[in-house]
Image (cartoon, rainbow, N blue to C red; front, side):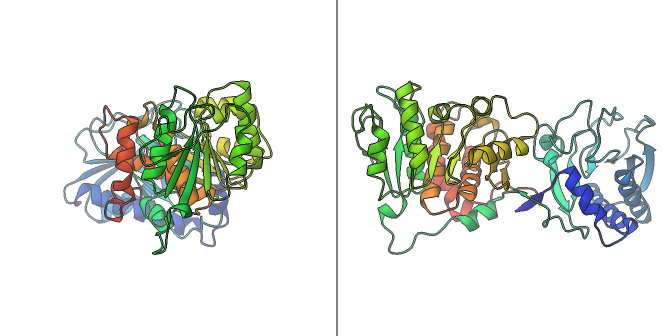
Amino acid sequence: MLPIVTPAQMGAIDAAAAEPLEVLVGRAGGAVARAALELLGGTYGRRVVVVAGRGNNGADGREAARRLRHLGARVEVVDAAGGAPVASSCALVIDAAYGTGFRGTWRPPPVGTTPVLAVDIPSGVDGSTGMVEGEALTATRTVTFAALKPGLVLGPGRHLAGEVTVADIGLDADASARAHLVGDDDVAAWLPERPDDSHKWRSAVWVVAGSPGMTGAATLTARGAQRAGAGYVRLSTPGGVAGEGAPLEAVGVALPADGWAGEVLGGIERFRAVAVGPGLGRLDAVSAEVRCLASSCPVPLVVDGDGLAALGLRPTGLAATTVLTPHDGEYARLCGQGPGLDRLDAARRLAAHSGATVLLKGPTTVVAGPGGDVLVTTSGGPNLATAGTGDVLSGVLVALLATGLDPLRAAAAAAHVHGRAASLGWPRGLVAGDLVDLLPAVLTPDVRRAPPTPR
């Protein structure tokens, strides 16, 4: 996993460095120069413009300029604050104007279609949130140092940064990092192999979802669990008909309209995880049952959809093995306000207050444990913005919890796999049922690795 540190944390890491600033600048500038060479394909006759500010970011850019000149490139350094034009004939622009701690607005020079290499972060992007108040150049590639910054994985900054490379310049960011970006190899290493003597009950899940006549969400959750490896799926709709909406391979078991939480708790001994909430409805009686189940469930529990609404405002006293899966609107109902711009902090706050693990859905999905550890995945895409995909995610998550993965990793792995499956589907026209059928392709070792994550 790649560490993610805030600008403030990075400042403290810099300040604690055992080596002098000029040594660190030399290494950073060298990393930028090497990235520039890769983008240029050579230096002979190539013209490079470095837009440099006055701080450490500018110093890194000037060091890269010195090295590129030594290799034969024609390099011009322009002042970031001077508004000097950038000639259209240059082969590369190096954006070394402002770093992760920049506040305010910046008016970058026009660069046309010239490729841009950003130093640490595209100038003008907030290092904590990824937001841009003024303007920013869209980078082809960004070289950042020691660790990722939240602004490179959140908001517009994620796309403005282009391909992100983390350069090692001799700083120990791992010791300070409480957040990490999850990649394909991480998830592959976490997923346990099924033992030779495995049987269906070793990864059995119970899905309590849907309402009479409204079984779509329940079906998608059950199917997602099946395709993600649950050996046995029991599907129950309180007050519904046994088996209504259940996939052929799932077992439909009736639950009464009232008092069903007690029946689930009384019959849970063979199940490894439970999912509750998708499509349940929001009647007061339903909400009371969800709260009863959430307060007493002895196995890992996924709470999604109407189950989140049932928990009410600012829930507390939940177990760390309970995973809440809100999107922004559901987060606002749980917390009284939306997550705001700092999504890592938002997920942490809800996890700390509730005691549960929180999976905050979005273009960048943030998973936080009640102790403050955070895992981030950027595998999702805009084709997931369609009805029912969240129900599939709940199914994937409950299945991974049933394999014995701890809640933080199970939630991050589920979100990552969910996004990867979407990347294999149609850019337009993907529906949740398609997503279910793509899950095994992602969970198969020979196709886990595509597409790439930042190095």
